[in-house]
Length: 377
View 1 (spheres, one colour):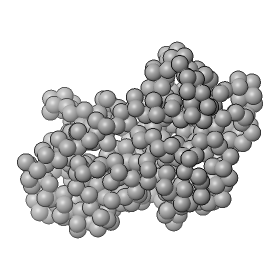
View 2 (spheres, rainbow, N blue to C red):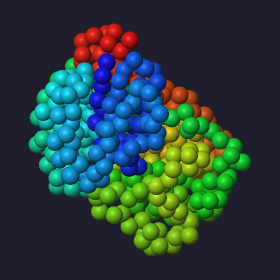
View 3 (tube, helix red, strand yellow):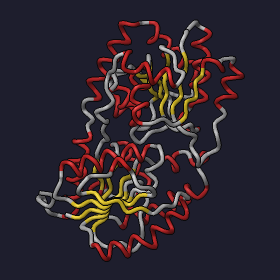
View 4 (spheres, one colour):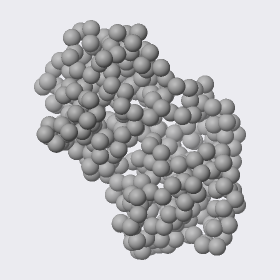
């Protein structure tokens, strides 16, 4: 089997990178007879040296120009290579590509809250994506919630959609204090902290989290609030430093920005609590990564988060309710026995989400759409 994966933009930190890289690595390892061609905007060392993976690099970082370049080159390349299937991993497709086509839809956030997205994004998801989804042969949804959203928004037949939950890298695991100490020291992170991981965006309710943390500090919590992730470039910048200053907790809020995968695993494992008050999630991979590190979490009832977390951890109804968020975080931080019970439940829940399962599930979708159950073997 020859598979082409369109993965432009995954060189940049973010959810699609967290999906595409481990998926490609896992599929390449599990299905060595399959030839994978991956279109990227920069050569990725994580995919280097894999015998059955070939990177096709279009070195264009501007989103609009990259789509134009891809539209001009991918159909020609596909005509020459004739892949059995093309998989678009970021929700957007290319016209004029023949053969079977599958697209992964991570969420429908631009339809759910259009006010916080660019006009071009909203235009695409409202008027172009419906035609795209009618044209492709199959749709992979990260969660049942996303699948239901696609059916409701675009009237897509349910049999066209397969749900394949995401996985968690095996490197996200409980770690000792000694193991993580050098990373925490280098990043100026103290021994006790509440953590959030994700792009700094209005989507994540981070202003609410900072205000909730100010209440915790006022109630005597001695630790820090650590925020890991880059500014979300497509939206207006969230003034977290200003909010922290107004709340009088500037010295206790550590805005780290994007970090390496290795540093992220250390920082995740060292957290006393992981807080995730997001407005909406198509899956919420950072939640699973925290759970896999044995870290207790508190999350908002947002999109697929409840589907992912199950009954392993406390769920609040509204992440924008910073008073409730502060109250629930305070309860968990003050009760070590309960916190350990939640951490253990989170660890068990996270074991359900592996990239091996994702790879097998994705390959099953390929075979289903190709109509050949033994195509990969």
